[in-house]
Amino acid sequence: TKPTISGISPSVALASTGTTIVISGANYVLTPNVEIINSSGAISYPLTVVRNSATQLTITVNISTKASYFLRVENPDGLAARTGAILSVSDAPTFSTASGSLGDGDKGEALSFDVDGSSDSTVAFSKISGAFPSGLSLNTATGVVSGTENGSQTSTTVYNFALRLTDAEGQTADRSFSISVSVGMANSGQFN
Image (cartoon, rainbow, N blue to C red; front, side, top):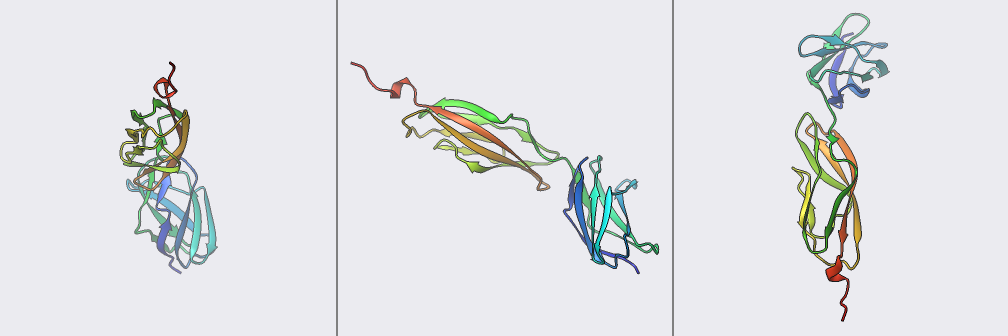
């Protein structure tokens, strides 16, 4: 019986890590042989192959070369199918800015704090929890948190928040940061 492949999920695997991929299709007999074929023609094999049913396989891959790959499923009788969809292997995004304090500033001042990160594709930044000092916002393309603090606080305040870095393949990395805003001497009172 000739197997068929209707889809793979996810379509992106992390380089050099055990990524689990579900292959959907039909006519999977016993435990088929699965090949991972690089666009250059080099063939590698999954770490594990599990036949969940006649319509689903689960494989674990550990591929160190970033490239595009086809998957080939072969039943014990020699009949096979190859994916039309391509499996991409890429690096996950990483932050180059250490977690923790980004720095501090004074109440009512223009402030700017840079958070850096990268991947093997375009990245975007987003805030997933916490709060920025009032008046500051995140540039989602550059990772800069900036603006003019609105000056409404009466004491030094530490703002904690978490940012997410997402690359073009939908892979993510999260990191926690903080910014401290001081009231300063000019706002502490007056002596006569």
